[in-house]
Image (cartoon, rainbow, N blue to C red; front, top):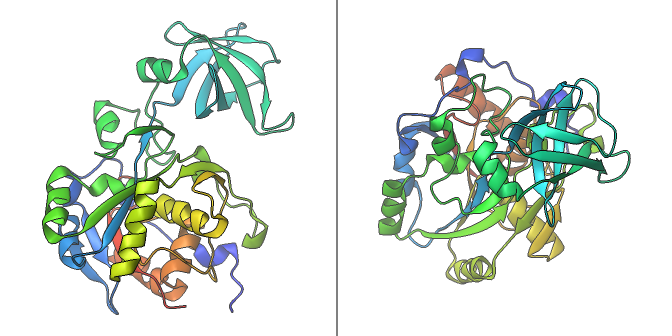
Length: 343
């Protein structure tokens, strides 16, 4: 098998193709159908026609929290927290952006009038993240005083539109700091059309972490270490997949986070826990037959995942077509439908 390096997953993207705002209608985005030999340009609301009665769509039902918080040190120095995970009690794990890191025990004054006391680094004393104790319930404080954690390539400050549209219509389990963006294209009308088509639905949960935007810094991708994220595959979803296999339908994963969840479960046998699964070409998929996904950043782990799923040459050809056809890229961009490459 070919040995891939980081540069294999690079491509030139005109900056104006990076979507800064969502499409006027969720299901009005474009959909590149890459399941056949030649790419086919469609609209996302065409998806039911591309699926068959008896197929099963699996969504990630995580809910994005307003995890970006601003404040200052006792010295007056400004800082920014990005909450990665809520622990027990009032403790959180967060990224901290500040000119000089404060010492352990420092009480930070946060915008909105609450405090965050620095307890140490995480997951150990040399860890890249920080453990803090909030003065009240973290979820309530984030909802009241936080900002939508838009990705770094979206250049505007978060607005009411982002609070609504950087969230899926079926989000229910709070904990993500990034949206499962392939699912942003689904609205109630499209879900009704899928029901009418006889396509079933199920959900998993994976709380997307900020590490999803972390660049790969090593040329030998085998040396890259993935961030860890919490996932759960509910019993109802396990049973839906068992029924799907019995009737011979196809499992359609909505988004790379759903793929990572289902394949983590298939590999470990654990229906919940932390996963740092890293999917690159050569990976043996056990669960997913079709994938709905957005267009990803050059040289990202997500480019590696979709290349593993649908075939490297095929994916790169689809990306060339998408750029030529002026598709919109990344979180607020358009989507594609991929079929698993036969192993």
